[in-house]
Image (cartoon, rainbow, N blue to C red; front, side, top):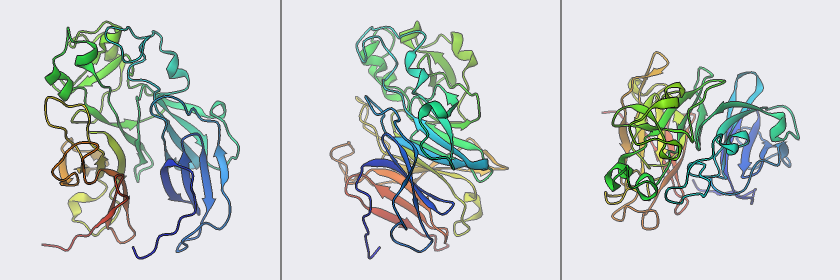
Length: 332
């Protein structure tokens, strides 16, 4: 906390420690810097593991997770809200099939030990994920994420949805991601009221119809709409009480589009696990970051990143002013 060392000036999203490297994801590549434990700067220039990733339109930031057997998982978010012919325009139908799924809105797997890969060298591991900024490997080696759900149900399709519907739908989905999974975007979204994947209005849905979405994979947990999950961390320490072991912390950046209801999120939530699976319950672990003005521009702080320290402390980073909090358990 007493020193700051800057050694990479290219903007990006993900920073990950592992296997003697710091992995870093600018918007169009995955880099790795050689690193030694206890050092404050890398031992040399970066290697480029993956280059020329899609870097246009919406949801450009990349997220990275390391898996067993040298797997490198990369989230490549969708370039749109719902793959409409005329993006974010009232009544515009969705493209069917959606061509954006060929290179976006999924998780791609690469080889963590091969340099100079492009997207064509990777394998699309899972599809139909609008934007999985929060992506991490569980201690078991399984991949999990929390998806940013779609927007503007009422402003684009007012004949089917009220403003209150838009504030509460769709869910931000906590998911277990396995090879070959399809979570349904853009054809489907998860309705937290009915706990069902339903057909998007761009594809003939009316807020109730299920149709082709019966085949889409369901989430493990529904988080409130538009909270914007930006990081996920499993608790691997022993400092916190036993009930936290291997459970999931989620950093919510906060909403911009829950009107006429108050904006929400701007917190860190916790979802307990038992026997390697989530219990389905969750609660707000840390709140108050935004201060009095709970809005994107007015918030004092917005949680964006999480990390568990070697001593079991939880670190929470902020995107507004670059703050980092360290949460320590002192016992009761």
